[in-house]
Length: 350
Image (tube, rainbow, N blue to C red; front, top):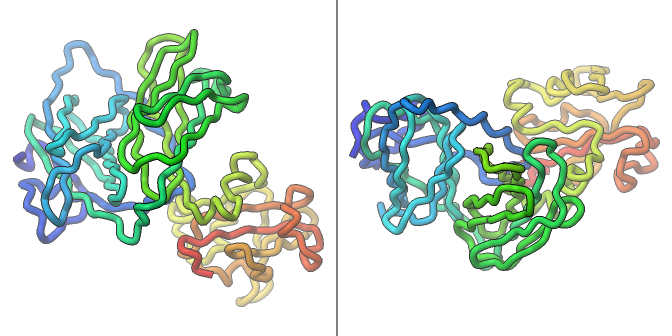
C-alpha cells in the first residue's frame, strides 16, 4: 500500500470502513449526464522528465474483491488504463496533480484529484449502483470526426472486439446494439488516417455516446468524449433536438451549479436573447423578442409562465425556444406562438 506521500485526493470524502493506507476516496457523481466538459489538453512530457510508477487497485467497496475492466482516465493523459483480473492497473506519470475518473459498468463513477509524488500503490473503492436492470442490454452510438476540422467522416470502419463491424454514414455516425455491460474496445480505421482504439465503459440500461477524433497522421490525440445519456430524456426526444441544434439556447445543470442561484430565474440572466421580468414576488416571467412571454413546461407538462415556481435543484436541463423554432407540441393555443422553456428534471420531480 502507498503512504500519503505518494498520492492523495484533496477534497475527496472519507469512508468510515476504508482499509486503504491512503484516504483515497473520491466524490461520486451522477452517471446520467446530458453533457460533459471538454477534455483537458495533453501534457507535454520532456524526454528527460522522470516518470513515477504507480499501481491502482480498484475494488468493490463491500466485498473488497478486485474489479476487472474498470477504466481509469487522468486529465491531460491520452492513455486510458484498464484494470486486469486482479483489479490492478499499472501507470507511469510525471509528478503533479491530476483529475482522476474511474468508470465501470454497474458501479457509480468516481471522480477526484490525484497528487503523484513517489512510486507506490493506491486503492479506489467503487460502489455498485442500485436498481439497475441488468437484463436490458446497453447501446453504443459512435460518431467519427476529423481531429483538425471537426467535420464528420463518412465510410470509417468502426469495430468492437465482440460486437462486429459497422461503417459510418454521411454524418459520421454508426450504432451498436445488444451489447454486454462492461468495457468495450472501440477501433476506428480509415484510409489516410491513423488507426485508433480506445476502451469505453458500457452501462446496463443506458445508451453511451462516443465521439472519436481521427488524425491524418500518427500523433497523440486527446481522449475521446463519452456521454452517458438518460433513457428518460431519450424517450422525450430531448437528445434528438440537441443533436439537430434546434434549441435557441440550452441551460445545463453545470451552468446552474456554477452560478449558485437561489431562484431559477437568476440562472437566465446570462442567457442571450432572454430577459427576466419580475411582475411581483410570486410572478417572474421570461421574455423574448418584443415583450413576448415564454411558456414554461416541466417534464412535458405545461407549468404556466412563472419560472420561479420551479425549484433550481429540480433542473437537469432546460431548452429555450422562441418563434418558429418552437416544437409544435409546445406552442399551444395559450402560448400564442411566442416560445417555450422546456425544463427536464433530474428524476421526473414534476
